[in-house]
Image (cartoon, rainbow, N blue to C red; front, side, top):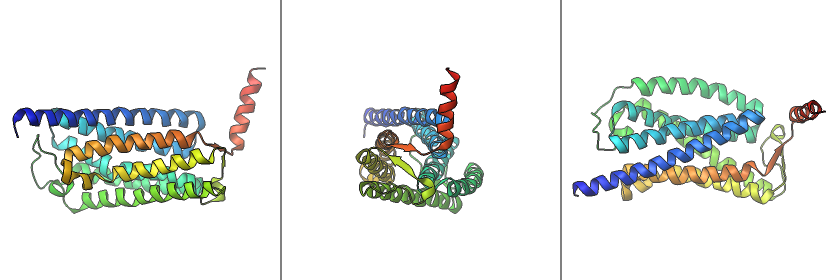
Length: 264
């Protein structure tokens, strides 16, 4: 392959990763704005998750534009392969299992995130990072970081997919979309909520498909494509699902009344 063709491919990968970064950043700002206004714990979990997605995408963008180095790969691996899906799944736990279960999982996840960050950032490497070659965890790291990536991505992805499909099925049957009565939500558009949940499950599947696409497009192109498409579908699902429910909260009602009284 000529140098011109290689440069063109790198430019396309950089554009894909850059677009994914911009979408993930918009997603982060959207969920952060909703959390600031509503203080719902699942929205904080989504904000953290999408912030991690944005960092991972930005690392890929930087590497495809200027070349890989060890620090950029460590950050890409940590945020993109180990942490982000777990925090995204925490939002699902809050919605399905209620705040008490979600808080317990959050405490464990905070500890696990700190442990994983320390391991990945100081883990010894097996090979040198080549600036123009896409590195993989299997080639670069030993057992511990790779186990963290497998557990941190695989199990939470199943939680998100199961939770989204469960909620979609339940809401179409006119039942509480959560697993716990403590997570009761008032649904005013069942079709929209079901569609949003299906989009969320689809986006998670797409993000998990980089290994399948790698054989056809190459590792860097597969990650760039799955990041862009997966985050876009997730964002669409969030926007659709978040506008289909109303939280039953005495605290929010009180806030609204207090706000109305302040204008009198």
